[in-house]
Image (tube, rainbow, N blue to C red; front, side, top):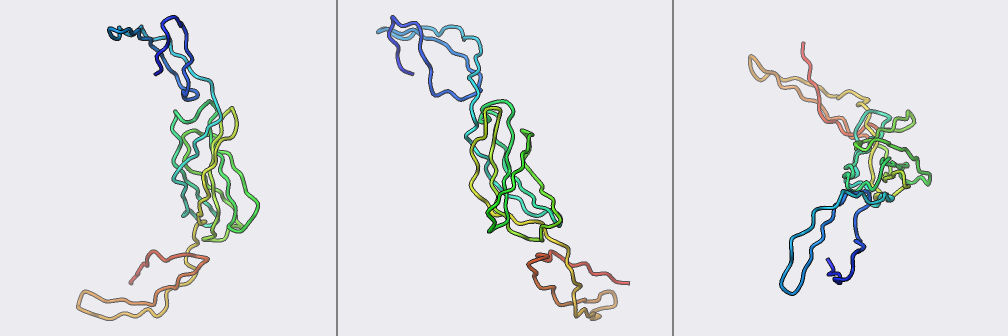
Length: 194
């Protein structure tokens, strides 16, 4: 820190973080050296301010049919800048001009699930997540593209056939279900026998 003239008895400390407790010490110095520091001052909390750091790692996707799952990495306490901290989640279908806004009032939250029967499976959404506290709304993240939940496969595999390969094994084969933009990827098959 800047050295203060010996005849001065007060100083303004700048570039502190909002809504953080600080304590201060004073050290006297002269041409011989530096003396012992004073006892620490009482704890003093700086005033609150609008948060300026947006959540990171905006992601999501998955979930059930008719759901849009949005996730983010929570903002650490020292960057919340005041009481009443929470998140603002904004999203819209890709190509739309109107944003839907939701408020998540929990400091610990890292997820928001929007449910609406009109959402078609695997629909792309533009998403951004911001922050607020009692002082006002802060910064929003950059836009991320997240897809709504998938639907269950709507058709059964075709062309199922079985071939005996030994006294204790049968090889079963079928044609794969093609990828469908509305239901999504097939992650696996279940083979039943009786």
